[in-house]
Image 1 (tube, rainbow, N blue to C red):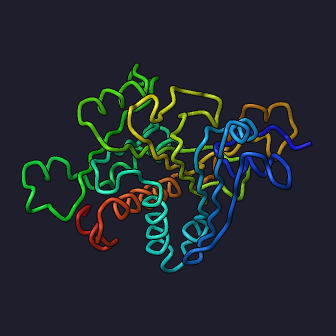
Image 2 (cartoon, rainbow, N blue to C red):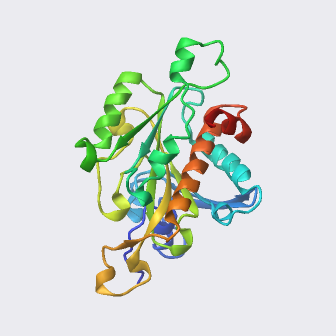
Length: 280
């Protein structure tokens, strides 16, 4: 019997459910520009119960080429991730609120806040100079912080922001937990089912979803910690999460990668070189 190991990845939940087809779950695999991609669709309540995930689509992209610093990995990977993001966006061209979730002061949890720094915010520019920025989509970004620092749930803060700016959709970026060492800092998951911050490490916060925010939520996450129970039977390993020693550089690399991909997905015609210039 497989160990009960915490993970945010639908792919791993499916793997831990045994081989063969699962009722209410559909899965497929393909490769684009050398990047392996797996899609798991939870179709109904039976599938949701099997994988302990809300109904929706979960796309996992291997970012190992990026972690290994392969030539052209960043440009090709960012373009591939951007295409996957566009495929799940309900309102292309509509006002998008990008939320960088997590604790910027805790490196393994800083993917979201760091990624938000790379987002090209254009909402104010399109409002004041619509003709000059006609080619860009309206985008705004926020870093809501964490409950322990602000005293405010991320869901509460984002709900208030959504009521104020009226976005067509929210893109939430967060750090995740994985069950496999092989996927640590080398995997990305996209989902149109929203996200429950902290669920992978047993620190569940209020869900961010269309039900709670009033607009569709696309979640993007990268696993930066792994459940120690996955590779140790010691009692002390239960409830313990580990992270690689080069987590600082890995998190910064992942954050830039995700931030650039979101920009490419939201702004038609933009290139990695354009983003380099705009964010320099």
